[in-house]
Image (cartoon, rainbow, N blue to C red):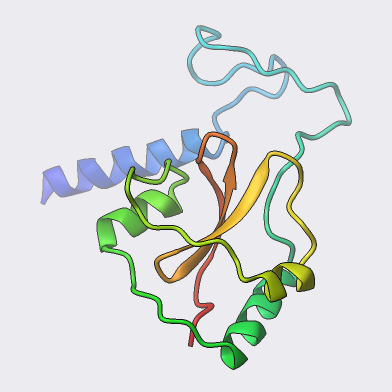
Amino acid sequence: MRQRLQRQLITLAGIVVFLGLGASPATGQGPGGGKGPKHKVPPGQAKAKHAFRTTDHDTFRNYFRTHRIAVTPLPPGIARQIARGKPLPPGLARRPLPRELVVLVPPPEPGYDYAIVGNQIVMLDVQGLVVDIQIDIFP
């Protein structure tokens, strides 16, 4: 029981650090004490976030209700990795979005691409890292 509580606390601490809640706003340094690379953002400017737009989920879902395709759910371990933003495993099948659907959604920003991976639609960067994910799209 005690080990389980310790693991939960460590996981919670990792999530807090991952979300940047441990960063010091005055110095821009994270909990590492300034030993890693420094990412300075000028005051008043936020970093650009590349993600699906709020309307994209409905567009994808409506399209695949009328244009059904066969999809297979991903194994749970791979689905968790993708949800965490890890790179897609080598050899994992990915399909481009159908041309008719690409016309309906705004194109991704330069350096990003959409793909169907298992039963999810993902946004990938140039290195193949998952930037954003859409779930519950396919009926």
